[in-house]
Image (tube, rainbow, N blue to C red; front, side, top):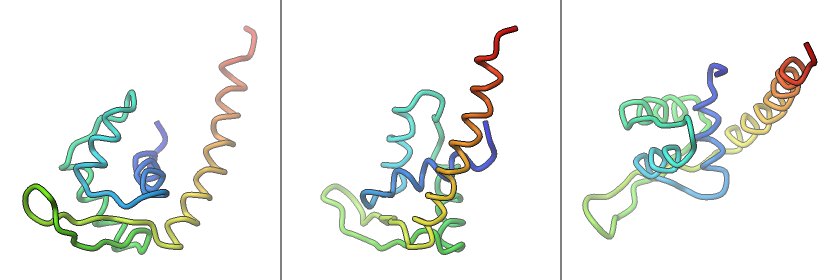
Length: 102
């Protein structure tokens, strides 16, 4: 798995809606091979915030304490688009070798 893939999966999950940390963990768990923990997600979200790729705000929760919701910034959208282009090139290169006849 390419380094940074989890980061871009998180950015992709935030592309269309705000989400809180545990919601991201659940969404990733639904994808085969992307199981992760809160202990991985929260440091990643902190780094993404520090790097200006996501922003956050606290919102009241209908059940329990307030939750920190994350959303993409313009820089985050640009980073996600750059990754999409890089991923397509990577995928095409891997497919070339995998699909090659021996």
